[in-house]
Image 1: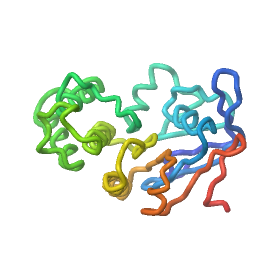
Image 2 (image 1 turned 90 degrees about the vertical axis):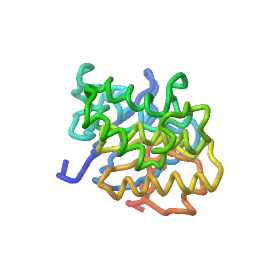
Image 3 (image 1 turned 180 degrees about the vertical axis):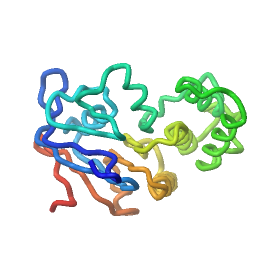
Image 4 (image 1 turned 30 degrees about the vertical axis):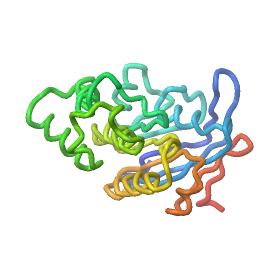
Amino acid sequence: MGLDTTISLKSISIFQNDNLVLSDINLEIEKGEFVYLIGKTGSGKSSLLKTLYADLPLKNGEGEIAGFDLKKIKSKEIPLLRRKLGIIFQDFQLLYDRTVEDNLKFVLKSTGWKSGAEFEQRLNDVLTKVGLQTKKHKMPHQLSGGEQQRLCIARALINDPEVILADEPSGNLDPETTGEILQLLLDIAATGRSIIVATHDLTLFELHRARTLKCDGGTIIDSNLL
């Protein structure tokens, strides 16, 4: 894996239970690269993302992400891997019983941060980056759908990850808000983070063309190789 390669997969197959979902996958993603992951429901998009964040074990082939070997990773190392990844879920998965600020504090504390000046600075920096600095005392239900997705992005950014995996980030948003969220993700990629966006949303392609990985026929077709 090169110095600027954050994800490297060589001849890997992905299984869901004992069912083969994807096979013969070879790809590299570089630092700062923005990539779409597309495919029909059930084609393997989510299984690929789950393999990358070590929710599904890698049984064969070679896989590395953010410096971790996915084949050799031990269960106690998985939290360390996930600190280097930011994961954005379509259904937000926010903590609805606490404020915007407390949603982020929960992540910081659970990944080993201690309260103090640096803790508060990190919190404020991330809220400013996603445009929620004036909403930090609001509860999630008081936010619009777009603001809730911005909070998800803030949560993904809080540990300064090398890679961001976004699963249908515009799935519940109107076209204008979709454009704002896409631009935010592109700005994040420009700071040197690799971003994979799993999506069905054709609006995204119209707004920004990028390398595309298509799950089709049990494998991945890479637009870079066409």
